[in-house]
Length: 230
Image (cartoon, rainbow, N blue to C red):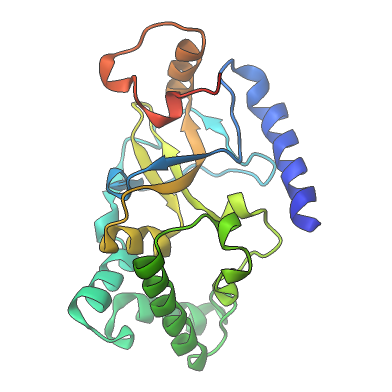
């Protein structure tokens, strides 16, 4: 019930603050399918957003300074652990979580070092499940979800998918869901569902032109975010 109320709230906020200003629909819960290898970068600094704008259209230079996802502490640690058999407690991510608990008293509901091993066991389970059974949406998982990794149970399933931003030129930039994105890259999943978080205003203007039937450059014609339901 709480998640359905949140979904209605999100759609209203999306309409009032974003959709109303553009022709091409800004659908906060629509999922698109892309290859994990298309997500190569993330913004060095993402602009702040609000809870009432789940898929905002924002201008600015936030999409120009980027860092590589493969240099992210989660991806590097997952690669060392799963491909090189390095124990979790020897990885940067383990130390990162430990530092957060020490400095702030908790990290993702964990408040003690002893809880870290349970979390690491759950990450092993998540990796094995995706490797053996393929990737499912959060809604498809339902009760199969590894609940203790779900730190936001009140959110609708679509809000908990891997999220991406889209830059002014249409590049997918990582936003959220580092665990699952790292795993899908490592096990070689072909396509994954992602939810779009922020679109750059210049990209949304391209979407508007396509939505009105105006031509675009050939390399953009098959972009997943430029495919509209008829």
